[in-house]
Length: 271
Image (cartoon, rainbow, N blue to C red):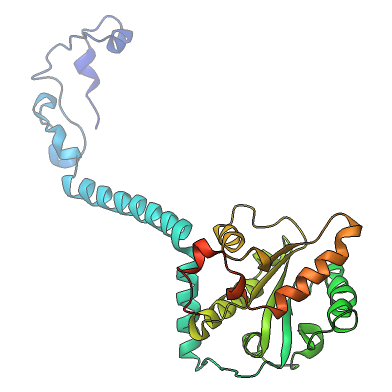
């Protein structure tokens, strides 16, 4: 919008326009609109300031911005509270569409399936040379254990190998490190081990903490309260390693339900 310059002909100083109380001579007759063309020549005093505001557009923008804010907050809250449930449902539905089904096993082929971070050479070396030797070769030997790098079928999908290994093993031993707990393999193995608890009422989970992981995890706190014998930490004192290996053998042999905490066992399982 432009204002004709002759409207300010009688003003002694244009800086007076910046004051709060400015008198514009001939405001009703001399100050007219120059643009847009449809209001050209009309008195500025008669101009409808509401014409510059679109109520419909403002309402639409309000709805869009409010919806974005509400949806963002709802998504963040849902991810925080129901991440594991939503992930489980998604993976379960995906498996159903692909034709996967639960493979029950009345006889355990392996004493334990060891799942760990195969991409970490230090962890792989510890599992293959220390843990395997202790469980299969030393002391009171167990059934053969199942290892990804040794016993998995080459070229088969990861989910098939995981399902077969967990289904045909007495226990599933999770060797946990910071990198492994953030991997998709850990999540999938945890889902399948939990599925055995739901389908067969058999708790097969044993946790071995090589590093102090999942400190704020409610799942780990629940495991400690429900079945402390199924949560083992690698000792910092070398003289305690013999006790660690014995505890691990016991955790693999003994049914978890048999050593549940009495205060919590009534809420889990029927055995």
